Length: 72
Image (cartoon, rainbow, N blue to C red; front, side, top):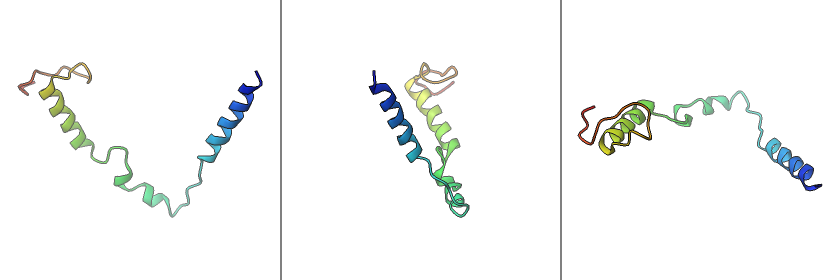
């Protein structure tokens, strides 16, 4: 029973360690396109479309995809 408060306190301490202040001169590095989660959204969209139309993986993605011929 006494283990839950200790675990909660430890979790809070670990989460607070991960927080860091970003200086104004460091924000330029974080705003670069290479730091984006998806640096090339158009290319990723085209790859997903090609994969879906070739593999007929319509159940995993949104929208109705065609068969393996690529003619949606």
